[in-house]
Amino acid sequence: QLAPDMQKGGKPMSNTQWKYVFNCCRMPGDGTDFVRTYAPDLHNHIVVARKNRFYSFDVYDLNGDALSVDALELQFKRIIQMADAKGTDPNPIGILTAENRDVWYQKRKLLLVGPKAAENEKVLELIQSSIFAVTFDDSKPVTREEVGRALLHGDGKNKFWDKSFMITVFDNGKMGYVGEHAMADGLTTTRFVNETLDKMFSDPESKDMRTSKPLPVVTPGLTEPVSLQLTLTKEAKSAIKEAEVTFDEIISTKELSVLMFYGYGSQQIKKYKTSPDAFAQLAIQLAYYKTFGYCRGTYESTQTRAFLHGRTEVTRSVNVDSDAFCKAMTTGALSHTSKQLHQLLVKATQTHVAYIGQASRAQGCDRHLLGLKLLLREGEHAAIFDDAAYKRSGHWAISTSGLVGENMDGWGFGEVVPDGIGIGYSVQNNRIRYSVTSRHKWAKRMTANLERALLEMQALCEANTEQPRAKL
Image (cartoon, rainbow, N blue to C red; front, side, top):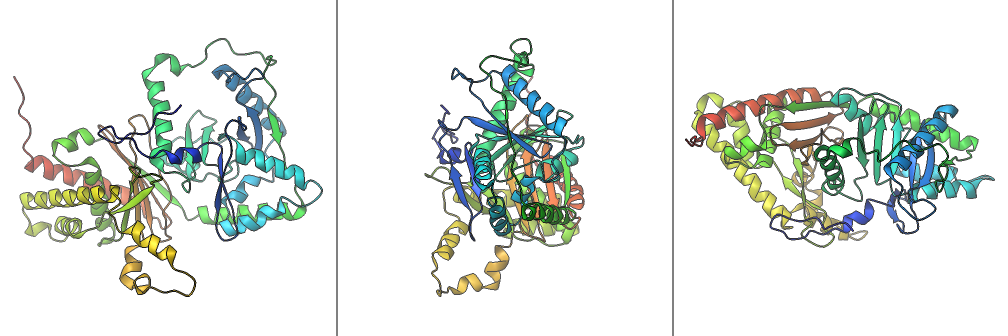
């Protein structure tokens, strides 16, 4: 059984999100999506995608024992050989799950008509009910930007984007995972990733996890993977082609840029007597100000899992103190001393830390106001929700979230509004990583200014923070 996630201080957090990680799928609905979960004791299979084709096999053998690493390797090899022999499927059903949700709801119906409708529904049910999905993509990304784009969207075809958890392996051995955010938050699924990576890096034997010689092609108790093939009508094939065109149009505007900053990390920031997360957030504000000349609404996800069924609250990173710091560091730099600038930095980070504390205790404003808005009945009206300042404050031009993990090379997500920026970041012991996405060619400018911001903030702290004396 999984030990509960714990808060600092040893108090357990709500673990209800875990039931949406495995044997779970997001489902398109009429105007509103819903989540479908499946009993894990009845559904012991995983789904594997290769060449836009889907396959399935049970992760327990005929004796009821969990498959060994060697057996899993054999099953994966079988699937890769089967798919490569058939070639790329010209009608990738997975691309439909990348469609607009209302469009996908309507197009899904096209998969369930015709003489093979019942068989098609069983295939979809096998995909949806699987423990999780593994996709073997035939691309070979090398740079962090290439890997990031391949995981964030790729060509959209060799995926089933509604699955809550997908592990992706590329032909050159690089790999990552994709999480469906509607059901669970990054901090939940990242635990799975971090524990796996930590074991691999700390246990020499796990670097080569084969426990014996490779298994023979015919192994007693191990059944062949099953091909999950849908029979498509002409209308369904046309819907798939339309989805491909829509996907390519959306992705053509996407830019992703990665900054891996090796100048310092959380260990050094703590010596500056500053919160690493607040420091990283203030660097985002300063970089945005350098890029655009002003601050805009910024969303930082803060977990509220101290409460049952808790998800997140918003920490609003823009405040009077962060704005004052950004202005002083740019347009007002000549009228401030180094000490004054450092004092503004410290005050801004302290304000941010205080807001995080309030948000984690469910004392933020955004979830409260969202709840009130959702309670409005048809025909009811509340002036605050039409107020220009309220609308502007909730237009997240900068959407951010931070995850930790020393062995995780990076992560990210897309912007949440058309004119916005998405920033996934990690403050590790001796480095800081930002992954920036945008639709307007702003990402590379932001990462360039993030590096400048981190260096300028470091210089301020080095000049104005008393360093510990060496012990002789």
